[in-house]
Length: 324
Ligand code: HPA
Ligand code: ZN
Image (cartoon, rainbow, N blue to C red; front, top):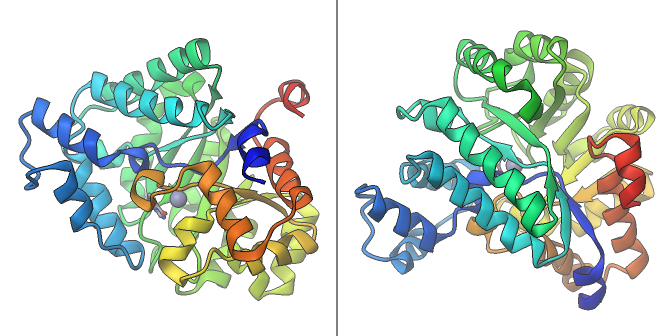
């Protein structure tokens, strides 16, 4: 089974580039940029990790971003992720990035996106990993800030396939960003949003995501199972759901295998993803292995989950055919 997981060509649709920042790289980059993060070694960074919910994770995630300063830093971060997953036989990725996590500390939008884009071009040429970038808005910042960043992204429209919504979901409903997402759609971006596992008001948030925002995909979305009307809507729209088993484990102490199986049984297009692999200690293949270890997922189930990711990706139909 481990061989099958390794050998299948795979796609990943839910990975935050800033969540691929390995402790060794955090440490090295902080040193080369003379930033004091308060850690004496990469090991000290790992020892400080203590994630038990979304806010406890996000505080580490944003603190480490301080090490990222130059275009080369963003290039190195991104290229290192592609190298890691190329070795796992991942052939296509739609990674997220969080520009507001950088502009808010004085790093220019251009610096961030140019470094990431150059790494994408090199990864395609040198590693055979194709990718299309998704820009996320931080939902715990204002809608005005999101609008400003949408404006910043317009000159780079050809480098960004879609927009998403991440960070702390509590009391930050999709409706807060209705206008931003409306404008993003009008500008030609695909739309997705996090619907994090077991968040406060999650069923309401999921209905807003579908009815008010009309997303093209849902990130996480495990709680669709809480309401038959949600299952029905998501299924009839054929929307993909990007579930992240190891990430879920930090919140609900389970890889959510029974939920993933239930979603498959309902005919929902579930996919498996890593979310923040450097922090959660599991890249894509380890997320698939978690399903096998916790609930003995079969080869057929794994193959379906892998196929779903290409199907609900934002590749053109012609490109999808080349992978499927
Ligand atoms: N959830 C919400 N926001 C995030 C995450 C996550 O898992 N990772 C990075 N930003
Ligand atoms: Zn995420």
